[in-house]
Length: 170
Length: 407
Image (cartoon, rainbow over all chains, first blue to last red; front, side, top):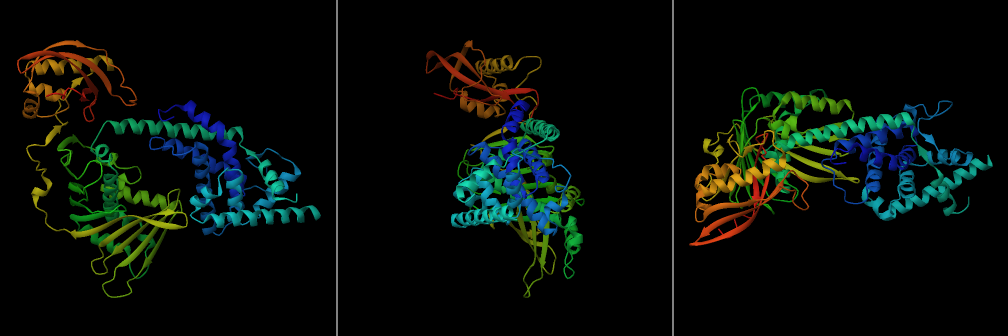
C-alpha cells in the first residue's frame, strides 16, 4: 500500500470495515455518524501512508484510530451541547445508513440499552468486546489506570443487564 | 441473560455493516488520498535539505520548533476575533509588523538547546536563516544555513557538508505547518480553517503581577490534540515564549519549548556564512554537471554507465569529472583521496541490480578494475551504488560503494 497500491487499500478496507463501523456505531451510539468516522479514518490512513509505520497489528491500529475519532466527535458534540444523535436522523422511520446485521429484537434492544450507558462505560465495553483490546491496552490508550477501565466495564455490564431486564419486564 | 458471559456474548452479536454506496464513497476518497500521498512523496524525494535534516530525531524536533517559531510570529493574524477584551491580539499583530529579525532558542522534550536566527524583508518574506542543532545521538551537531535558494548543511561529526538547491522551502516543511513558516497569509488561512472546524479553543489570561506575561492557551482538537501556550510580553506585546504540549490520555505532555531571545537585534553577517574547515568534505549538489543525464537509457543502463565513467575518469586522473560522478566532492578532495592509487583499466562492469534489502531507487553495479599500488598491479572488485541525484532531476550519480577500501 505504501507503493500506492489501490488493491491493497481495498483489501484492507474490505477486511476491517465491518469491525470498525461496529466499534464506531457502539462508541458513538449513532450508526450514521459511524460511517463518517470510518470514512475519515480510512482517508487519513491513506493520506498518511508515507509516514505510517506499523508497530502492532493493523486491526488494533485502525480500532484505535476509530476510537480516537469517535472520542473527538463526542467531545465536540458535548462542547456544542447538542447530543450527537440529535444531529442525525437515526430514529423513527428513517433507515439507518449503517445496517445492523443481526437485526432481531434482542440485539436491537441491546443496542438501545448500550446507547443509554455513560460514554466511558460504553467505550470500555466496546473496545474490549468489539475492539478485542485488552484492558491494559485500553488503559494505555485512555491514559487511565487498568482498574478504572475494569470498573467501567463491570459497571457498564451491570447497567446493561438491568436495562435489559427492565425492558423485558415492561 | 443473567451472567456477565451471556451479556458479553449478546454484545458480540451486535454487528453493523456499511452500505455499498458508503463503501464506494470511502474507497474513492481514500484512493484519491493515497494517490495524492504517493505524488507528494515522489515530489519530496526530488530534494532536498529538509529531507536530509529530517533524518535525525533531534533535527526533526528542531525543524518543528523552527516552524512553530515562525508560525507563532504569524499566529495572531488568524486569531484577532477571539482575543479577550483587555489584551487584544491586534496589538501583537501590530508589534510583529516591525519585526525584521528574530533570535530564538528551542528546547525539545529530550533536552538540550538549539538556536535559530532569521531575517525577514519588509513583506515578511524570509531573507536568510541559520539553525544550529546541538549534539545529537546519531549524527552529532549540525548547522543549516539557507539563503538565495540554496541550503547548506554541515554535519560536524561526520565532517561532511552538503549544498543543495532549495527553491521552495515551504513545500519541504511538514504538511500542515509548512505554509505557516514564511507565509503569513497562508498561516492565517490554515488557522481560519481550523477554527471553522470548531476544533480550536483559545483562552487568554492577563498577567497577575507586574512583569508577568499575558498567556494565551490555544488548544487544537482533531486526532492529534495539541496545546500551544503563548507568553506575550505585556509591554511590547511581542511573544516571549511558546510551549507545545500533546495530548496523552487525559493529560497534556510537554513536547517542545521555543524562546524568543531577541527581536531585531543586529546579527553578524558572518553568521550566515558556512565557514567549514578544510578537512570537511563539501558536496555541492547545485553544480549542474553532477552525475550523468539519464536521457533515454534505462535505470540499469545509466547506473552501469555512471559506474564505468567514474573509473574511466580516475584512470585519466580527471578528478573534477570523477568528483561530479561521485555526487559533488571537489577535485582537490578527490585527488587527495584517490590520487595515491594508479587506476589502470576497467576489467568489467556488471549488470546493475537492486541491492539486497533495498527498497529505494539505488542500484548496485559490481565492477572489476585493475590498479597499481606501490608498484604492484592487481584487479580489485568493487560494488558501486548509483541513484538519481536529489537536486538535479534526470541525473544519476554515485551514492556510495566500497571503492574507498584499501586507499
